Length: 434
Ligand SMILES: Cc1ncc(COP(=O)(O)O)c(C=O)c1O
Image (cartoon, rainbow, N blue to C red):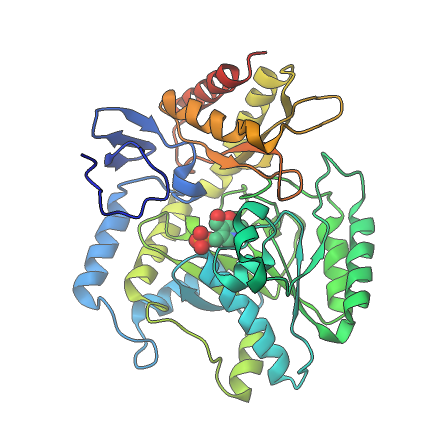
């Protein structure tokens, strides 16, 4: 009998995890699985870290929970100051929630609240890219563009205006050309109606680490500023060192109006997400009234203590620089091992967010049909080799296209990383014999 008979499973017949430490998950049947996916590209400092466990226990014993309407906590104040010191946001204000979807819901609502506070009542349209993923709650899902997740809920969706994704592997347009297209869509919708543009700086969950052309973000930012459209940078996956800089935005010196984050900020020790807004947005909204938004668990003191402890480990162990360094080495090794494989279209990424895209035909870049389930099969084959990787099943257009992401904890040892690459290459050859 399955021990979890009453669980509403997300997937059936998965191994039972009984212990996890560093980059290894031990299962009930005695396997030691290397966590090449860091959970869901989330466990930034690995499993079982004593510094985080101690901080969590201490905060739980001191003030485990108070409602944010009634009390401040020292834990949150310290954590927010810490986040503000690394986030590329002017005079940052941190609104902590329980995950990435909630962070994006919060940012979308805050964008609207900001415009309303300024008397700009028409601005409500959210602009997002094709092939994006911003979460599974209704507002965040509407901003997302991934058929498998949205199809059943279409009657509730459809408020978001869509612009093309920027994928240099499949699209030769420059950043300037993309910015011109965004400018055109804003003019079509009506510049006075557009509230915000939400996008990942480097596309992770859906597109497997697609890095836009170098002139993309500077050009896009200029267009948004010109039209008074806020930039919400979704750094749920890319934030806190994952791409070899503190934030993905830092690769291009972009200072967004808001950054959303989750995953790596708590490394999985607490369900934590952040909506980080500029001081100007905070002042505008709070001077006009209050931001009518919040959750029972937002501003949680234990979550804040966990986040702060994780940031201290990232700083102490210099994990942002380590992510950049190990990422370069790993991408180079994967390219040399898979460079001639007829079904590997591209190895790409920044830092320890590394994507491998599979194609049916390298010359035409034609993807496999969705029914072949190549990404799922490679993920399963990797698990058979005792390695987790992250599945990306819609990398071409939000509907088809296969890739996997390798995104281990940032403090994975070099030997472990070597072994992960060996196992991933073996899994790819199992599914796609060269
Ligand atoms: C870029 C991005 N945004 C938002 C989300 C949603 O975050 P969560 O699953 O914590 O709600 C994800 C999750 O994969 C993500 O990768």
